[in-house]
Image (cartoon, rainbow over all chains, first blue to last red; front, side, top):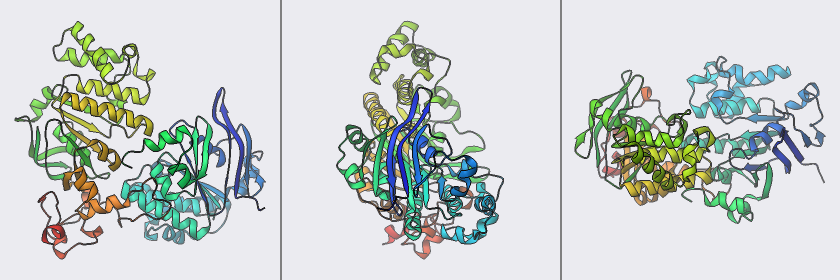
Length: 245
Length: 304
């Protein structure tokens, strides 16, 4: 059987006695979205940061296409960096305010020393390439998140780790970005690790859902099963608490 | 009863809120919904006399139980007749003071004796679902949900006739959100306060409000009961907003979207501000601003 795009096994991240991520195991395939849902402090953002290697896990394994990332130094990780990218919640804090949109999207290309098509990337995420000369503060929240996505796509990654990518956006803009992510996934065959507290958003994007509570995954399965017929008490409480459904 | 007539708020010559009128009866919860920049929070800050920076009331009136809310009067009425619950409880609480003392202080400032204030504070704690032992805690020793309960206790301490809750649970986790909303609704029922619940969350408003007011680009575009506005929205913006909202259980797939973005206050289009994004816009919509008639501000609905 072929290796999944991402295989995370018994991943752990501790800060002293606090086990933020406490033995988490899952897989994400090409073209597939696994959503990790849970409340603040459950460890889902730490998990995202461990997978994206913004922070070093305490233990366990993260394999991308069969290649073990966990023991690699920063230098040895660099060529692999292009394979997975992170999209943050708040585009206004993750984009350098002094750079133009063009410079922001070009940055990962520059770091890897490769050429790329910045106007093409902007067009692909639904931005007028004429916006390349603007600064982030001249854009709306939705446009800024599109810039964040264009930057993440610049090196043609296989996997996007999306940490609450639509949480800071208004309802109408949220729907636009969700649709954009669905289209990009289909066109590029991307695997998504989608971190969110919002079960309604997750319902629109996820093939599979994993519920995280106190550093552990308490339930994993197809989205319609986990959200429709939750088996764990904690999942049931989460689903019941969603207002207006 | 709160009656707001033709309220206009400007900032640097730009109309942030542009002729908003609505009423809230005692015991009623009005859900005010809209996206960022729609003017929903500015409207309520203006009513309460809490505008800051360049924003100021440039027209219209707000009347609470027959008394016009002027700058001078608001100074006295806030706290006593008007209670607030804001998104971030930290902005309403003093980090250096025990929470029980903070609740008593609200009463003391308005002339309640020390002993009576302490007794009432204990009652209020119980009313918001916290044990009396919490009175001795400092805000940082409580969870976000508990802090918001303290803020609710302070807001209802003097049995206000108007309660303004602006995104009261947005910063909280879903399971805590539900509990805090329950506390807020009980407090609202017990005081009989006319309540305005400002929120971007349509689901939350659906559960907590009696009536809904939808704002877009500084104007009210639709008002009605929860069943009317959420069940059968008439304004093309409200209708599109309901459709674009993801729901648990609808399954994976693209959502119906509203093209474009809401306009910034200084670049609002003429006529109906929604017309460039509207699927049923008429020629008239680009020229004349539709008034709110029969609960909806739309030429296509009114002429059609």
